Amino acid sequence: MSRLNELVFVPLGGVGEIGMNLALYGYGKGKARQWLAVDMGVAFGKEDLPGVDAVLPDISFLRSHKKALAGIAITHAHEDHFGALFDFWPQLEVPVFMTPFSAGLLAAKQAGEPGAPKIPVTIVRQGDAITAGPFEVEYVPVSHSIPESNALAIRTPAGLVVHTADWKLDPTPLLGLPTDEARLRALGEAGVLALICDSTNAIRDGVSPSEADVAAVMEEQIAAAPHRVIVTTFASNVARLRTVALAAQKAGREVVVVGRAIHRALAVAAELGYLQGLKPFHDQDAFQRLPRDKVVALMTGSQGEPRAALARVAGGEHRAVRLARGDRVIFSSRTIPGNERAVNAIINALVDAGMEIITDRDALVHVSGHPRRDELRQFYAWTRPQILVPVHGEALHLHEQAKLARAAGVPEVVETRNGGMLRLAPGPAEWLENVAAGRLYRDGKLLLDPQVSGLADRRRMSWSGAVFVSIVMTAGGELEDDPQVALIGLPLTDDDGETFQAIVEDTVDEALDNLPGRRRRDAGVVRDTVRRAVRSQLDTVWGKKPPTVVLVTYLEA
Ligand SMILES: [Zn+2]
Ligand SMILES: [Zn+2]
Image 1 (cartoon, rainbow, N blue to C red):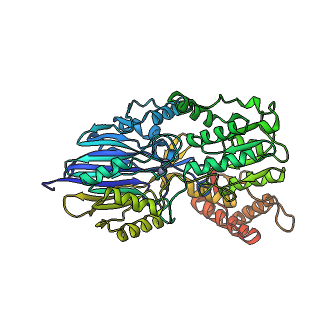
Image 2: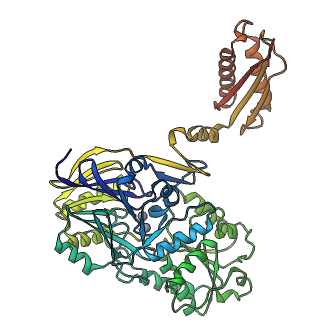
Image 3: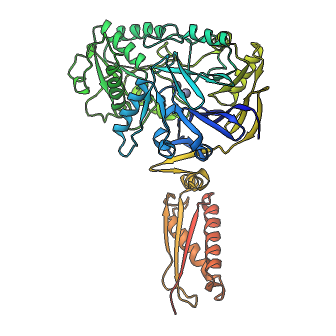
């Protein structure tokens, strides 16, 4: 055990992937460390995880150090940073820190999710600091794509760490505070030991456009639209909702809100004074009533979510909103990887129905909330860290930021992955060990270890369906009745028109006929023989071997 007080950094999520951010800082002697968790987020399920709503980091390491966990500091209210709190807080029950807007969204989410735990939150205002164990944590304002985003300046007796979380250098964010250059310079002056930094856009040159640039384009787009305008965007991007509302106002149009998530975000924003200067919004029932050239609708569903408003509007199934040829639909959003197919389906349906579609390919109707290369360089120059650790990105993003930081002259640049424990002080930054890390699937009401989640079988069945056979025999091995066969997800017939039902039944009969009587009294032999015969026959006629379950029952003599 080390005799010196060490400062270590251990990411449990978000390093080597986009999403499920969870970072730990440990301070103390060897294993007697105290811990601070920064963020507790989710990643979303993809098509290769059928039925999985969200992917979460494995927190078994954190659970086993729960008594030494001083608190959880949340940087901002995006789901990839605070979406796992309801799942994990009851296992940890430690103080949670976040800003008023984040706390408002958490409370609104809690009210909308039956059974969600009530988490006692300690509110931190931007610019203020809190103390958790040996950590002093200052919330430093940064621009991003949700109100009240923060970098954390984490002070320990072993040195100062700046954990950037998600940020950009937008000098005109239009809502909330811009990235606090003066404060970051002052931290650099005082001496930053390590910078743990967002890598999302590290492969992109230059500087991200400003929210003010989007506002100018949005004004043009809305003013030039001949009929109705629908804008879909991320509900929590209140600056964007405001941008759209102001552009509508300028064009003499009323704003209608369609979708629960936007209503929820607006209610929280209104409470905190973020909607000042805006005319009241209308509810969805006003949409059809307003003249076509006097309305702008803010709508949920930019990611193609099947139950959100836009998907239902595109399908002609929305109760209050029907579009007509020539209406303009603006996607003020980026399609998150994995959602492309769903979003494209909606766009195609809208195009087929005669709508005019504007995406960020056509005009600057969206900007990213993450720093490009020139912004990263600027941040290094302000904070002048001794050590840089790239986080919040896939392998390529992390590696590109590492190269950029080296070229910019950062003395120590360390690439790491989830579960890797890095010592930041004392001495040069160094890998110490790997702790338990991994992922969990949120599947309905359960949190599952991928190994025992059933996902492998679920994927296989999504490819080829499944076959079930039930065989009932006497103790002597004679068939009591015809075997029962049930198929799920198989085609009805083969190329010759023979039904798969008949094909499987015949194959089962034949396999049993060929088994000598003695062997028919062994359930294992019967099961394996029938299973192999069915799969082999289906491979011959279909070219696929679906999962096959054979149940064998013997009646008492
Ligand atoms: Zn993020
Ligand atoms: Zn974010």
